[in-house]
Image 1 (spheres, rainbow, N blue to C red):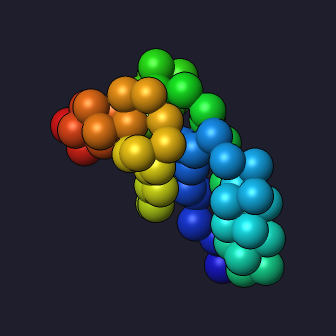
Image 2 (image 1 turned 90 degrees about the vertical axis):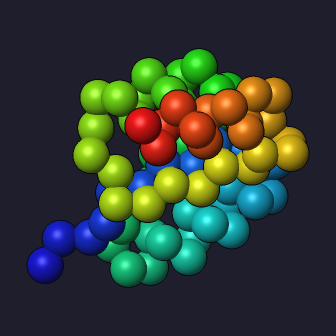
Length: 70
């Protein structure tokens, strides 16, 4: 069985490490992005099973959420 492929857009290293540890236990692949532009570009090229966006902690996070959903 294959794990999920997820992307996290956040800039807090503590948050990133906790999420990576949790998802990694289940064999999921986690892609990290720290800026909205690269997250939008990455999501446009891939099918993602999960997406976590820190809308308050990353500049442009809210607009990235709207664009990635499209």
